[in-house]
Image 1: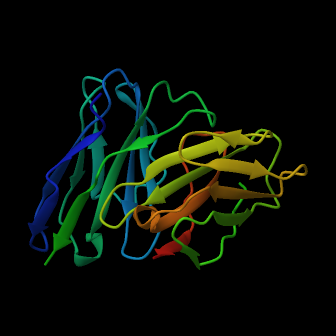
Image 2 (image 1 turned 90 degrees about the vertical axis):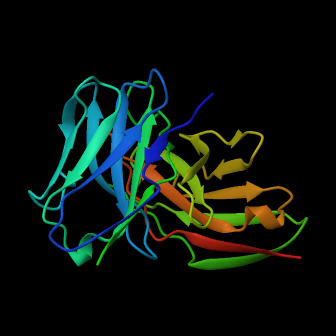
Length: 116
Length: 109
């Protein structure tokens, strides 16, 4: 079946602009996660959705970052007033229930964001 | 939350077994060990996970020591396509995963 998809695959923007990154989870998965990966490092957790609500947003770096999942499926990560330091690969993952550590997260290919 | 320690890089000859070690000496009893890999420019790919017992699937085997303080991921017959960064992760009880720097495995012909 189809995996996690993310669009766009690449995004180039200018400092100060607003960007939206989209994630389509695996059909039927209720839990959705966003991560950010800087060059040469492992992914870092940003936010976790259980259904429509953000169950844990402790990884969001500041209030310029916001994510929504209004219908419990597709999610959008929104970054306001982008800075050069926001350049990274933004990864999305989903899992079936999000019920605990025994459940596997499946990742999408990521969106590569470059802020000039 | 538990952390993991992995060697930064390893080489393996094509066709041989690749044994990737991971130390997680502060792991607690209800935390799982997960392995993912990331091939260049792709998202992380799930490989295998376990709690206490050794596990095997079509991709790899996971050997967890009896005291659970370390584990080894085994790729039985490494191919050039197995060249990737391999992450060992200990899952805490909430729903995020903490990736370290991983081990960069290079499979050589």
